[in-house]
Image (cartoon, rainbow, N blue to C red; front, side, top):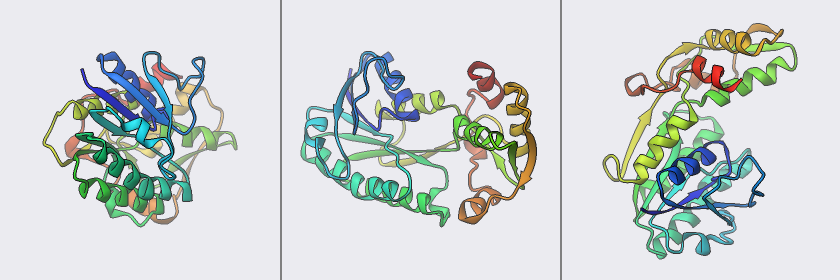
Length: 261
């Protein structure tokens, strides 16, 4: 079994990746800015946790030392995301190369290089850093997580409105399915130095997803058509959030709701 470093392993996707890798018998080390207590939902039994900061590089040498492969599920918000995806990725990959890590896998977003949305521009820059790395890399681009869409509905419902984004369809995917694909890539599945796109099993309108969420949660909020503004909305309406030819046979939104809500 391999020694696997999961960067950002306490986030939504990271926790699922850690659990998948531990379940397969790998020796898993999780690098994050904060180490969770063993009663924290972010903690996965069987993994070893260490403190590291991608942007300052504090703790990176200790984190990568002795690792065979790393999986990068790092994330951030606002300006922090830009620094994490650009400076942080450079620090991570340069340090990994110096310490002999042979393989790196990056979690990214479908068609991230087609949008002027600031978060996507930073992710596209992160991808370029991986492409230019001397380490063997595999980039996995995914469509939006079920959890992400559900969180948008939940946030709107607190104000009495469930947003059904006009002229927008989603191809949502389960984080557990993404974790399986990423650990497969870490084990060498697929061509080296490649970028793969994967999408959820079904393409559905935003309204259909909102209706399914409302029924599953019993929310009394009203479903309302809303136009998503800015570059992100433009990308969604253009269908750049979809990967119809790369749909997987995984957990769809309704079945995910029934097992989650």
